[in-house]
Image 1 (cartoon, rainbow over the protein chains, first blue to last red):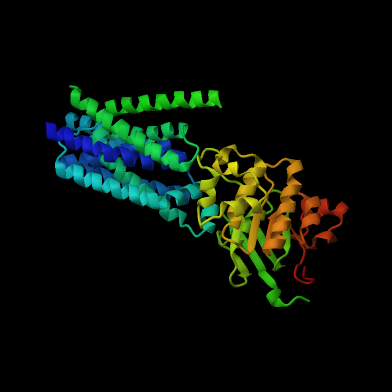
Image 2: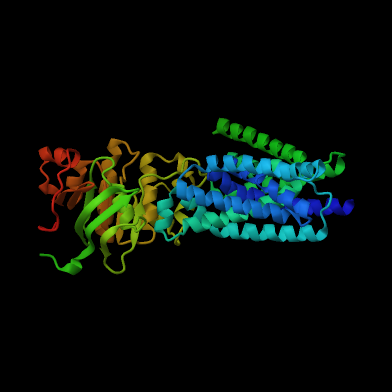
Length: 262
Length: 231
């Protein structure tokens, strides 16, 4: 059991940093709800993994990325809003996922997270993937921000906006798939959104914003898993959410106090 | 008659269709190096589309011929900055290496404290100046300005045009300017292109008589043949 806790805490650090860091862009893109909804799309992938006895997180990632790429493509072709497409796809995926799950225990673990089976290899591989995702996101971060400010401006500077958006969706899919292991599909959206909006409360520049977002992601993830290890609660996900919400509440108060003193 | 190598841009028979609608219809005009061309027209006339086409962002027919070694700086009309926690310093740093002091002095922003401000809290005039400074950072020889006084109060408009005029002269930049202000156009632009899908006027800016200007630019479009008498 101690091993599981140590591996889970180790994993929560990397998941927290990467979800917080990548989430900071998701929130800026006004795609916070997209990030949340997207995570639910993983459910059928997890179900297929459980049913056919292969690593469910590979199934989750495959579903996430295929859905993200499909939404990305449909949105470019049809100009239907991102939110509408994700909304439709997410409910469909949730329905398929629930039907496909072989038993309720497995469904519960997929929805709320299950780290009781985390091995050292899992933790190391997942953490390494998170580090790569962070590094690649750092490379395209300012380009994505520029494209957000004005897509024309970015294209006129020779930035292939469609390509970096697709790469970003790919990286988000990876990080969300890994995050599901800790907090589950229903709650992983939280790790992408809340550290970023908390960071936004305290930031007047992008450097600080992205850094704080990553730091808050770690604090929420790590402290949630730590609390879980001392409790008899079956899932760490809800505790991660509580830890994150406390951080968010503190930033709201600090932001309010700063405005009062300015 | 100007030599052909005096021109930095030659556009001929440019037509743009978007979703089966003609947005620009058979546009032809030339622009000489170091001059300012103002582009006027009612909303939906295709002015911004013309800029985006010149930047090669939109598929088109006809030819757009820039001279060699053209480097374009672009200031779009709309930027989504209100919600981005980005400082002026960070914004100016996106792209090439930047000399902040030079960047600010070029656009007459003397207070360096603006560098640490968040983009979203800048006044309309400050934001436009920062966007222009960003566009100038790559040392362009062409500047495309899409309504450079958007969000700027009337009193602050002329100082921005004055500044642009100085930049044009000192940096030897050819300037393309989309605007609605006919008075300032006649003051600061060399040539004028009035668009309403097609060209409704093309010539020296002082040629457009003030009483008829409104009708030509904003009235029922009457397309004219261009490039007979070159501007």
